[in-house]
Each structure stands twice: as C-alpha cells, then as structure tokens.
Image (tube, rainbow, N blue to C red; front, side):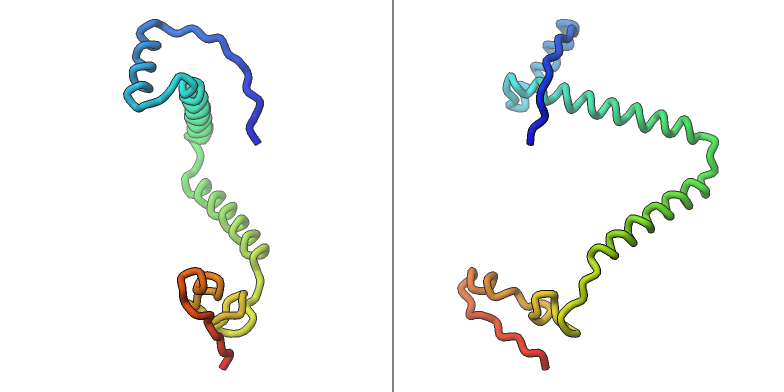
Length: 122
C-alpha cells in the first residue's frame, strides 16, 4: 500500500538543479525519479541528524553501561523470537514436515524431475 504523496514547492540554486539533473541523467533516471531522490535524501538526512543527536546526548555515558543495555535488549528480543518459533519436530532427525533432515520435500523433488522421496522413521 503506497502512502499518499504531498506536493512540495522548493527552491534550489541553478547550479544545484543542473548538478542533480546531470547526476540523475547519467544514471538513466527519469523525471519522476527526482522526487524519489529527494525523499531518499531527506530520510537519510533526518536519520543522520537523529544519530548525531543521540551520540551527543550520550557522549558522557559509560560505554560499558551502554553495551550492557544493548546486550540486555538484544537478549530480550532473541528470547521473544525463540518463544514464538518454538515448535518441535515430529521425531528426532526429522524436520517439521516429517521428512529426514537434508531431504527436499516431494513437491520440490517432483518439480526437478525426481521421483518422490520416501522417508523412513527407523
């Protein structure tokens, strides 16, 4: 789903206009790509400024404390991901689809001209 676009009226110097249009044209970009380029540049600049602000705000922070906070947050996210995907295989050495590990499923094998795989649980 595409976001609704808004129209901007901006002013830039003739030099900037020519430089940007030459840059875009050299890369085979069309007229509509100017808007995409500007949007990408704005997003990048906002992100860059946000990072600079965060770095300045944390300049006096203890690096070990920051690392501890990051490690804790990463651990929580990983634990949540593991909890959501905790589904046990059918049997030892089997995948969730009940075939031996390393065996492609029947549809994949048939699609490549192979006979269907026969899985044994012994």
